[in-house]
Amino acid sequence: MEISRRADYAMRVILDLAMLPPGMRARARDIARRQAIPYAFLQKIIRDLCTAGFIEASRGRRGGVRLARPAESITLLEVLEAMEGPIRLNRCSREPRLCPRWSFCAIHPIWAQAQAYLQQLLGSTTFAQVAERGRQIRAMQFRNGASGAAALPVPEPLAAQTPGTR
Image 1 (cartoon, rainbow, N blue to C red):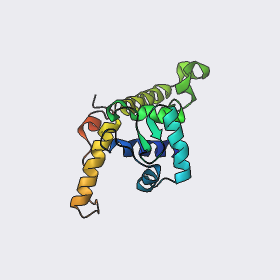
Image 2 (cartoon, rainbow, N blue to C red):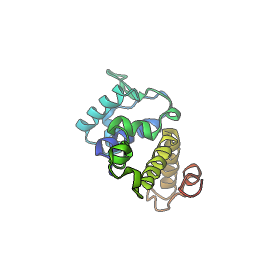
Image 3 (cartoon, rainbow, N blue to C red):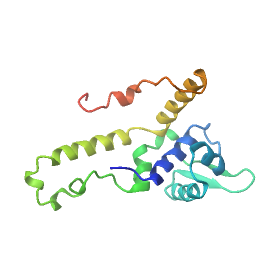
Image 4 (tube, rainbow, N blue to C red):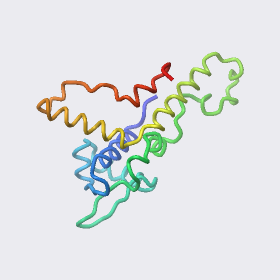
């Protein structure tokens, strides 16, 4: 499974806005530059994110885009599914009874568990949490002379949710 470039860019846009002070607007060109997203593609993604209710856009001298909701209330799962549709690792995860092997397949429970874990992780991770991690990374890069050579430890909320530690 690989998420599309469109979904990856949408996540970057929401994260970029989540790292700004609440209510602050950003120009699309600035987001494109900071996040290395082609401007023409970014315009389409912004339109999709507006339609989905994640961001608001306004034109004019004081225009730009901003989050329509607090970053604390937007999860990675919501944005990913708005861009890609429901996450499904395989066909039998979507509709198990359509699979002729469903009743005796030994691998089906593994797919179901992996999918449930992924949905739980993405659904419980907000952009406010990711933005805080982004701020930590930015501060570390600043301290290390922008090299960012040292790695951050896995954040506690995410580390506690790894399989087998529940």
